[in-house]
Amino acid sequence: MAEYLLAAVTAAVLVVLLEVFVLRTGLFRRPAYWITMAIVLGFQVPVDGWLTKLDAPIVLYAEWAISGVRVPWDIPVEDFLYGFAMVTAVLLLWERRRNADGAVDRR
Figure 1 (cartoon, one colour):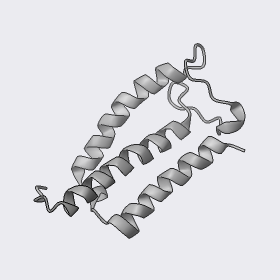
Figure 2: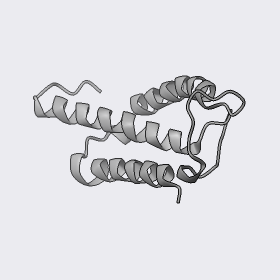
Figure 3: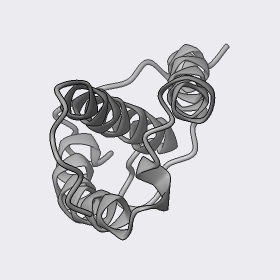
Figure 4: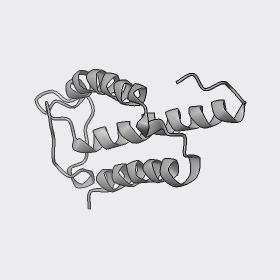
């Protein structure tokens, strides 16, 4: 079973559900969020590609733990889901804390 895939999908779904049903920060409606994610992706692809390239990997994944889908540059697709979940969770919690502290919303 592709354990990393299952964990990454679960994390991504839980983060989306957390925003939609619990936190409701409106983060997904903000252009700044999507620009941030594009910047993260812009750095993730070359770094992750270098770390996971099949011809000289620095990070190895057990074949049984991943789906086997690798795009681009041999990056396991699970890494993108994990990155989305991790960055989005941090931003959501940051927004929740900022709003709880009574900070002025400067959108």
